[in-house]
Length: 146
Image 1 (tube, rainbow, N blue to C red):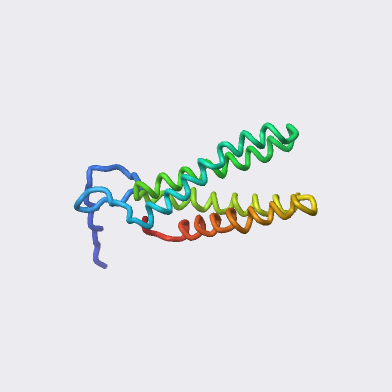
Image 2 (image 1 turned 30 degrees about the vertical axis):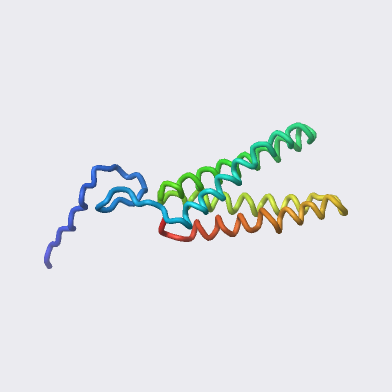
């Protein structure tokens, strides 16, 4: 029985940051990743005025639930988007969280909407914005590279 020693890891001068480090330093994100990061950050920032609208127009109990859900979505989108900009491999967890939160938002929006114009708006927002964004986040969460 032979004893083998594992090859020691090369020290790069960085502690476990989750970023890719090669010969030239941290990896730079490609054009597609920068655009995906911009989409996520823009979506997260777009939720901020929406939070104020919800807080001001809904009854307090409903406002608390909806604002909390949308704050969690915004945090996950902003976190994943900024990490994509920096080519940080840790974008996957917040992207997965954003995908799940967006899907939950769609389900609750459509399920609680009153028949008529309210349901039409909920369905339009789901098809035009929330489901495509959830699909992008899910796809980004499954990809290994930044």
